[in-house]
Image (cartoon, rainbow, N blue to C red):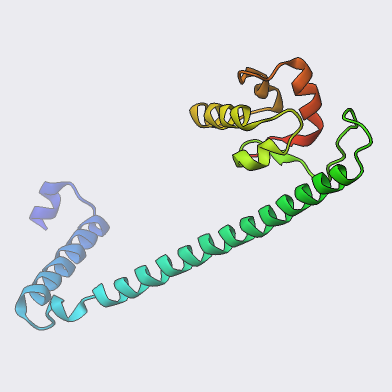
Length: 166
């Protein structure tokens, strides 16, 4: 009681402090008495299994996304190829407009895909890819005007056939 008055604590505060001290002391005794060794509580095997399952799930998800993108891309390329082949068969004169079913994403297209666009040859396709890599892609289709060899006229011809997606 004298200690309680000197410390300035209320009865309930002192009871809480005493409870915490007793709990701490019991914990220390159990920890170091050898009653239950902490080695018996190794969770490393469970952690390893969880880690393996997580990595497997993530790799499956990445593979699934990659497969879906490859399927979408193969359909896109096939449509582009079919459209261009139809144009070659029905070409009455050189000034006929292209009638493509799809748009080419200039942020992901390969050089061969870009060369299928009107007025784009091997050199311009490589310039587009170089520009894309140096500038982390195209933000808007008009950024194509910044590529050497693409002016207003060529851009206007390309505009219906291109898209910019991340």
